[in-house]
Length: 221
Length: 308
Image: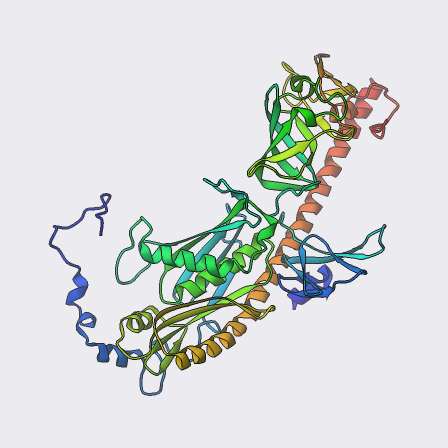
């Protein structure tokens, strides 16, 4: 049957409640599975995936579903969020993605003044680090409030990834020129931001390269 | 019954035309005899112990495009649609809870019941079904994955021909799996109507009506839902009065019946996974094609710029 051939091509399909394996040192339950009475069971309908963990050499058994699983951001995850309101004490944002998966519904996150930077926590001005409309990478802190996620950007790799300057045309994102400043390539306006260490893919730079001989593989410094 | 102001209501002392039909004037015994004929077959041709799950069962997922996950279950004439949405904040909640909640709402369409029209405002029966559905689904869903949030499970019954709660639980289980809500197991459900010493498995609406209004010693309806792989009963609902032997007999029958539905549900979920996989492959192929075209255009522009 055509269906059988397709199933063979995909691999092992799991449905919730299927027993996958024993749970011991060699087999660890990953996302999409749960552990009960010494066995690992599937929790989602999807495709079975086993990966080897480099540190412990154990198989991480997980079930990958084609839809984003209905899970919320967990403590310690890196999330992508869009800044909505900037106050002198807090920064409010909407969480768009958890890790690589895009969320269907945006959840509210809040960034306190003390959690924006790792150093000089008290003398930081949130308006100089974020502006409404910026896309930031942040880490989720343990939950204290019921419906808001506490976020933190107190690491070098976290902070603003995509930002547009005031008065610039839409779609033109700024290029970072230092860890605390960004510049718009069109209007050449400089604005202060807390920049993340990950360099964003800047499509303007590859379409209109400064040096004509270089190709578009010069995105990492 | 509150008046429906959007429709023309007749004069206040008007009654339904149904009280003048021959069916209404039958006595209880005549109605009971109507239910099954000499060979022991029921009105729709089934045996007394034959459920609709074998030949008259249809279900599919991805029925509602706006919902995260959805399912449609049809048991011959009973038709049920279920939609499941992503976790959202619980309104009016003040305390921190470790487990998430399920917000279940069962609604009958106004045209669904044969005996009367359903009002728009949820009435007592709908509220009771919503509570029963929630009790059945709570043991099946991994609620520790969404603390302080609730998942909406909305059921809309398009036609009521008996076994509504069982169909609703089956549909909700499928829709939750379709929406990638982590579950401990798939949930299946079935119901039985008892009238005297006769058991009608998967009753139709007429059988349910007579079972509820019967005056025999054992009468009533039992709905049971089972987590198949973990072999646990997640919910047991009984309407009516029955003695202990009757209840234990019915429970054994129901366990077997719920077991029979499981391969159907499994097949639907597998087909769903295959379909999504195919869709993903197709989308990836399309993106590759578009990226090729875009790359070609970019090379063209770059060479134009460099040439100038």
